[in-house]
Image 1 (cartoon, helix red, strand yellow):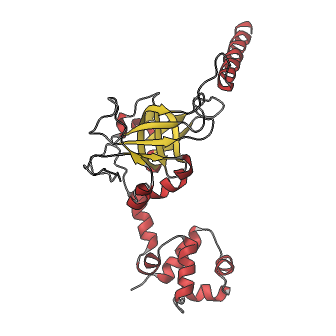
Image 2 (cartoon, rainbow, N blue to C red; image 1 turned 90 degrees about the vertical axis):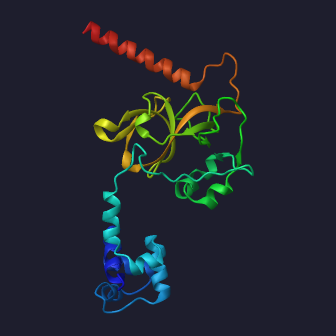
Image 3 (cartoon, rainbow, N blue to C red; image 1 turned 180 degrees about the horizontal axis):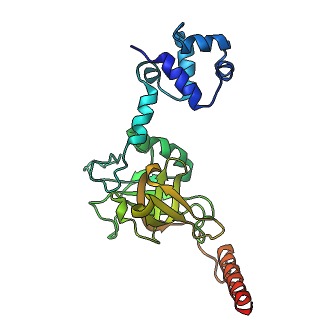
Amino acid sequence: MNFIAENIRYLRKQKQLTQDDLASKIGVKRAMIGSYEESRAVPKLPLLQAMAYYFDVSLNDLLDKDLSKEEAKRKKTVVDVSANNLRVLTTIVDKENKELMTVVPAKAAAGYLNGYADVEFVESLTAFSLPLPEISHDRTYRIFQIRGDSMLPLPTGTYIICRYLDNWYNIKDGKTYVVLTKEEGIVYKRLYNRLEESKTLEMISDNHQYSPFSVHIDAVLEVWQAIGLISFELPDADVPSLFKLNTMFSELKNEIDSLKKAIS
């Protein structure tokens, strides 16, 4: 038994398309979409491949799985926050079977979201050992390069040395972490643990021009605790940064607001 008719209808409605819309997307007449969804006709292989590509599903899944039920199962999946079950983490080892530290540069951030569990993708990244006493041989480490100014005074391009965190209940308020999320991708933020109250992580930028936001734990894929950094941009002496000026301005504004309240 195949599920072509049910899956075409389900995927079309998921994208909020009419039969006319889908027909124009894949280059057939609207009547053909109706006949496929009603099992009066079966799309030929090239058209099935086009649909699979358009809906971003595998051809086998389009043919052989009830995708509506698969989605329901996915939504019911309980995130293992405390890592009681095995979490798969792809790592690279040297010839002596010692784990290496993988580097995820900013240009690979988008690819990491899709390939973080893919052996071939992780193997394509640079990996090396860092012989420092702060680096324990029984833990997993990764280096992420950050972009943007949300974590000023850390400059864009800084490499953050991170230690893998399996139990997310151990996230400590106010400490910095690299978090891989389904929607945001790789983010480097100061976290506040709200798992007990609302199953969320509150994410704060050190640059206060960026508003805090929360991410539900269902959207979290990996958490890495920041333990150090590597930067090739050295600070200038006695030159106030934009971040410091923004902070000074914010503090001054708060003082003025407090004085106004006291007077009134």
